[in-house]
Length: 115
Image 1: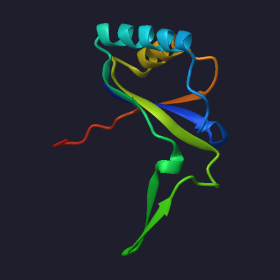
Image 2: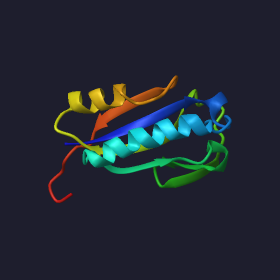
Image 3: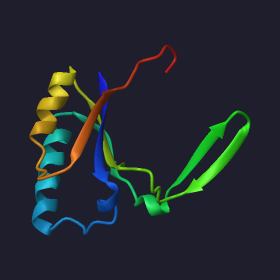
């Protein structure tokens, strides 16, 4: 099964300082373990919401809204796309991640015919 792991941050941490070199080394080591295990299909860190855009659909009307978005309490800061045997396996991997804070959301990617 494929799952999307979303790293969430509060709006106030959207422009937080980058991680220390030591923390980056830990993240890199963890990512290497995921790659060696064949779990990672893709990953990335997103640019700050101040550089983002939203498109709101209302009937035939399309409205582009520039970031940052004041009404947002949590923002998606990054993601992993994983191939795992089960949701439990994804959770076990995620619990090993070297993070001291933050919230992560794990969602199964639905399989549709022809997709």
